[in-house]
Image: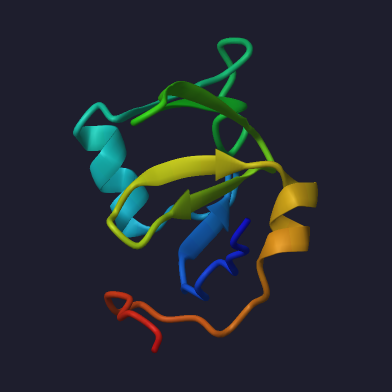
Length: 100
């Protein structure tokens, strides 16, 4: 059986409950994402979000990482999986370019 290694890619991500990037705000406006609170009080950010993905609707809780993939797709990732999978490579307000 052949073995494969995942190609290194650079993604953009933030934690739900922190400042939102423009691409997240655009997804909320386009109804690809809905944000929710567990009660009627707004406490500086949503308690959870429902994200429409190619695999169906996924829930992200406050503190989960929200990832924008290489094709603009958005999906949640639990903090422990994110820590095992990703390293910080920098910050940017510009559009991400593929890493060679």
